[in-house]
Length: 219
Image (cartoon, rainbow, N blue to C red; front, side):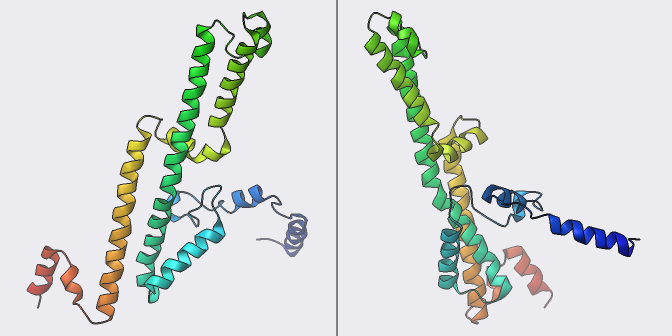
């Protein structure tokens, strides 16, 4: 059992801790209780706006107008799926941009090899037959490589690493289908709940056939 003196000492020590001060530190500590992604408190990835997400969520909630916690659950599901679908075009664009610059860098490297230029070292161009062309080729390769590694394409490159690069767009297409199904499944559930609340339909109408038969057999 803790003594009053120890309790006082702990209170004094806690006053000395100011916690994280930088935005990155605060973001990291906000995820301390997080064990996995299924109950994450945020849908955001770096570069996305919390204000924009809040506005997006508010717009859907105002349109759906859920009543109570039961209708709020599928509404939140809709927001999650719709926000992730909204992100997909940016990922596709970033993947294609990154791959395009990687291809241009590769072409510049192959051109340097064909012309017997050094692939990376500009100072070695002084020994080439055409130093100016050598320097331009090496510079172009470096620029294309840097453009492909630009932070603006980080999300697309991160996705490619997650799927090991191969067939990234195909995986993304399947992911989009999954999100669309989730979105419309949640929308259907909201419509079912709201129709039932309005007394327009019998809740049992939407149950699977076998479940309905079991319910009818008990009447």
